[in-house]
Length: 161
Image (cartoon, rainbow, N blue to C red; front, side, top):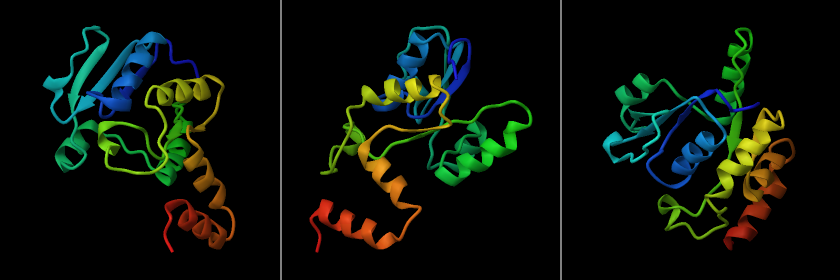
């Protein structure tokens, strides 16, 4: 998928990974980026291709107005539903990134600058699903098999007994 001349919607665009996605999409020639935030006035993009939108994922009316969902199975369902009209749906999957939101999390985190680069590289390569960190890759790989080894590995990684 080539993002040049495409329209994108980015959630949490005022900081962290969301902000980096907007910048990367602009660098790659997106024609328009709907940048969402709880407080769209907090967005400070000067590029005219950026369209601020209010989106608070905890506010039902806000979510309905923005009309976006992205969970593993939801992505697959939407992908199938929209395929007939020629609308590609790509999934980008991530465990945790070193952002303000994850400041209190003491586990593996990817650099937020890497997320949009790896994501858009995967999309450019034609991937329908891009996994950008080792943690998510491990979780994804475990879904097809017996869950016991997965829970053992998670317990060891988290230092729980």
